[in-house]
Length: 206
Image: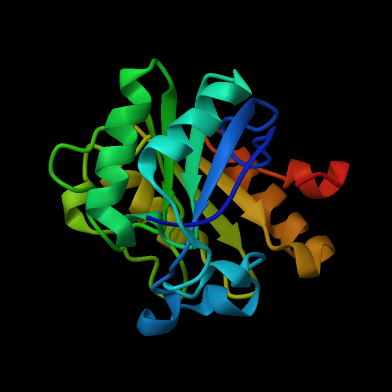
């Protein structure tokens, strides 16, 4: 599978912010194909190319994760589900050795049949914030970026479609004063939701 990087850090966003885990960043993203607005503020443009990174054997990735000793891994991108069958094999291999697996996806693709991560974070992207219907009942966390075009009603609809998912609002960093104020006011109006600040940016870590 095509891998950009494997590294250990703290999760900087969402429900698991502050928890140590290994990150496996996979190459390839479909945001450009779908004309998603996140391209304007994406902080990992190096992950867009599907032929990026290095062709890496799954056993090598598993060994790197095991050596970290953290016991928890986050598969991210790009859009990791573009490498669906390989991701399914990697998740199975990691879980087989006792590693808890998180998958972060933009929600435009379903999970491959048989893929059951320990945690699924869906970060739907503007302008339409589309989530594939086949993900219903599988989403543990909805992580929505608050940008200049943010509309709370869209998130309310997503939360209604995925009632068991935690809802995290993340202010877009380039306009933090503005987006932070909107995110804060929205969370105050929706007490079941929570604010997610990019902790890794605050701490200056990967």
